[in-house]
Image 1 (spheres, rainbow, N blue to C red):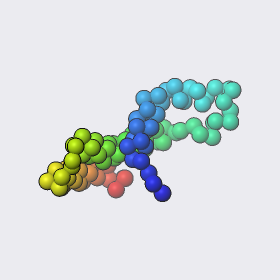
Image 2 (cartoon, rainbow, N blue to C red):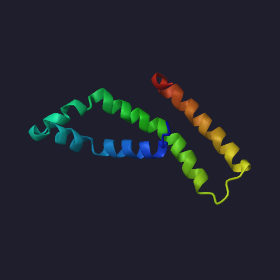
Image 3 (cartoon, one colour):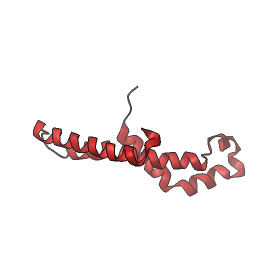
Image 4 (tube, one colour):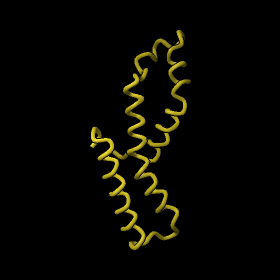
Length: 97
């Protein structure tokens, strides 16, 4: 299955920005069929964790896509930096490792 991590990150970011509106919309009486999609507090919390996790490869991708011709001398240090950031994040949020 192909996953576009940056697109997923952007959708999560917008969902978090619109959390209050989404919750109010789903709570409307006219939207009873949507109640099954209502996110719990722990679901919203997990989306915040996913946002943090996905922000690292997104920044890595953005950095490399800004280069006209990414070269190995740019990619390897950037990849090492991404790995270090993920390790730090793993230590901060051990539940997602």
